[in-house]
Image (cartoon, rainbow, N blue to C red; front, side):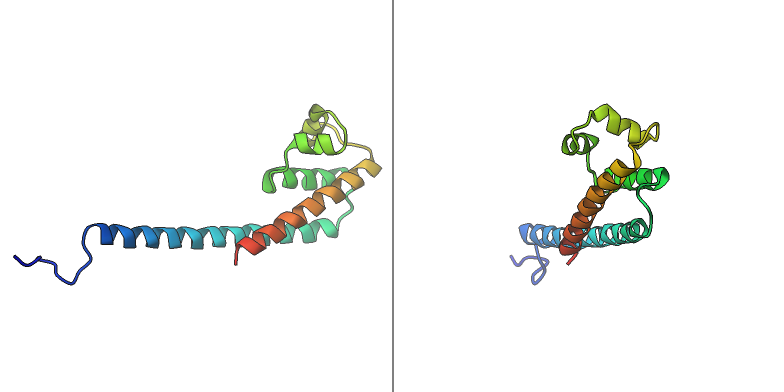
Length: 126
């Protein structure tokens, strides 16, 4: 007896085609996401480079963007600058801020990390 759907994909062939299509679409979506994130970081970095990070509000914006958008952990910041993690946590919440010279040094480091992340996302978006 001849198969009723002769010439069409059947069974595991259909599954394979579907899985390849899903995987391709997932890669496309991930590339699109990375492109959008890289563009957002580029906009933030442009804003930060035109601002004075020694100002408390600018510093807080840079810090919060680094923590929320680049996922730099307060513990990593604390370790890098030999601080208590609770101190960095208070900065993130806006309860306190370091002195102006420290704000500039910390902000410069955070901006460099954000640039690295932007470059990484751009590469993944290709």
